[in-house]
Amino acid sequence: MCCFFLAPCLVLLAVLLLSSGADALQVIGGSVTVVQGDTAILPCKLRLTDSTEDLTQITWQRRTREKPSNDNFITVGPSQEPRFVNGRDDRFKYIGNFNDKNATLQLANVALKDEGSYTCIFTLFPGGTKKTEIPLKVTVPPFTNIKDNLPTLGTEEVLFATCTAAGSRPPAEVRWLTGALADKVRMTTNSIQYDNGTTTTVSSLFGVPTREINGQQVQCVISGDFLTKEISLPFTIQVYFSPTEVNISLISEDTFECVAEANPKAKYNWRRSGHPLLESAVKVEGAKLQLLSLTSGLNGLYRCEASNPHGSKHSQLYVHVASGTCSTAWTLFGLLVSLNVIGAAVWGFSKSGYFKKYAEQ
Image (tube, rainbow, N blue to C red; front, side):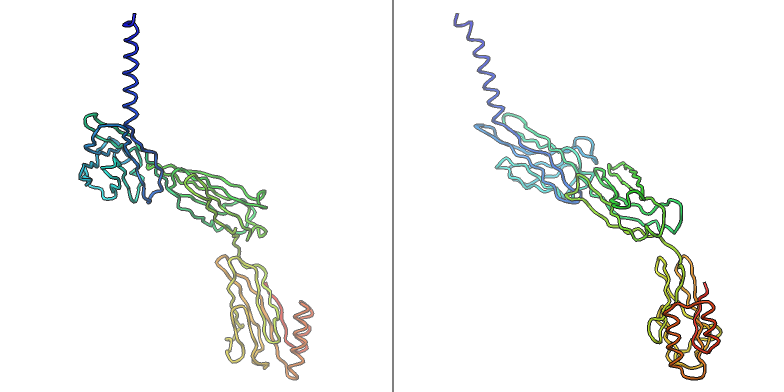
């Protein structure tokens, strides 16, 4: 009767012994994620508990994007000197300890081609081999930029700008923060995936190029699992247009300034009709014209032209110095300019012998 129950007991005992032996030999690894260009640590250690097994060799295999077939590439023996197999790659460095059953490797300057599965193998006597796989994932941060499409003033919808996150892995999310302009602009997003696993994502911003929207600020925000924080790229919407109405105003007792709205900012050029600008009589600094003396030599028509790459416009200033008291004439002319008297009034004062100004668009 005893024998009837003995066989099941022996089987159970054998199972327990096998389980105990398996628990005594355990290879510890882990998955690794690294940014392209950084250094990766491939951890691998054999844990021995109450085992009489002797370690005779450590072997590393890899199956990567560059080498899709399983490939032995490093072995380590009791001397602790790693030996490269199938070609040397000095980016790999053995940082473990053979006596401690530690097979850990360091891989510097990680590239996309290195992504894959790395297998750490311990060869034991008399038990054979124990191994584990360490997956290596490589992420690639994007190259980011915003490109201004240089829109000109108009009434039809155009492309304002594109925001690009190029060559990222995994794909980046690209979006625009438009604030109060949400109902005045729209966005589209497209992506292209390449054979090396990277993706370029482009988000485009559209709207009608009006003066009201010119100078408004928006942001392009780029996010993804590969980033510790979002990338924010500020952008000022630029609507380009030629100089509009050119105004000449008196800014001091002897100096006039030419002003015009334009984008990009206008450059100014003063000329005198039929005569050169005499350095002894006038001084020109950009948009400003200064009269250095009050003599009849100043008499004539002065033209200020405002220009940028999109066009030009001009206004004219007529100066006349009559015989008599110049200071009185100058004061009255200054009053005319400040009151913006134009047309017939300007012509009337011209007849009376004072400085005069008129605008021609």
